[in-house]
Image (cartoon, rainbow, N blue to C red):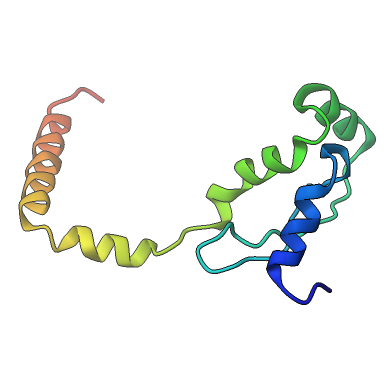
Length: 109
C-alpha cells in the first residue's frame, strides 16, 4: 500500500502504457469513481465472440454500459419528486396525457 495518493499516481504515471492496470481502485474526493474487479464465467463461444466483436481490453466497458441501466438508478425518486414540483410542467404533461387518451378512445380496435 502506498503511504499517500500522490506516490501512487507518480508510480502509475511512470509505467509504460502496457504495464498500466486497466482498473484503478482508489478515489480522491471529486475524482473518478472507484472501480471494482468482477470475475464472471461465460460459455467459450460467448468469450470468443466478445473478443472478436468487442475486442480485447474493451469487454469491461461494454458489459458495464450494457448492465448499468438495469442496476443503477441514482436518485430516481428524488428526481421524480423534483419534477412534480414544477407546476407548469405538470400541467402541460397532464394536458398532453388527457389529449392522448381522448385521441386513443376514437381509434378502431
